[in-house]
Length: 330
Image (spheres, rainbow, N blue to C red):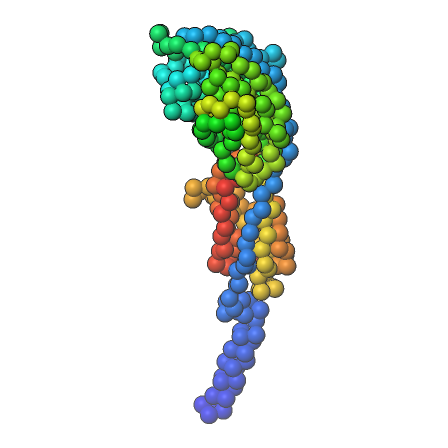
């Protein structure tokens, strides 16, 4: 009886084993879910207005100088002020809320300083002062811009020299649709507005040895890239200062297009996209379809570093991740 029963038992075990190994679920346990590849993110920004120069005002003094606020200036504007005097750098007292960007001296012959401020709804007159006993003309010009970013300009520079030709500094910017303002100052002379720029102001404090001429011109630069240098020629061969300040337009709202090469696991359900900031996951999005190769994400926060993490999934199964990073810059 034992010999008769044994073959039947063996056949049943074999049938059970064969059925198990051909089961689809069991195939998934032995296959490897492949990750996508070539993950990339491309930023886009909502459009914002270009920067517009409102107007300028000016003033002249000896130990103090004042100017009215440019007409139309209001909350949200950016103001730039240039002061100049025929001497080396001195300790200057600026009005409340004004911050020094740069002071540049051409030896001890002439100095020009640029200040900035985010305008409020009710701006008082602009008054700068220098130490008592200072001699020579003390000049001031104040400009106002709308559509500029309300933060300290981060791109600016200067050059100095002596002679009839002044050249603006070579700078570069990562911004787009920026406003470039060039300031020229000359001891006992006056440079015309450089070609390629629009005149903001040009005038001299007088003809004495202790006078100076102030000139400013601006231009829109599409960016990003290297800003063209500008030159100007004066009839006087004296010390000069050339300064350039870059204003960036109000930041747009960034979003991104996320793209990748599809996983080779065609039986996968789709992808999971994690967006992280500082190691913390902000969001997880499901992208259906193993053949899908792109999606969008946003709106995002400007000037923020993001990490994107993409995995292939099916059911509760996940592939190893692929990652890429982006710092938004609108």
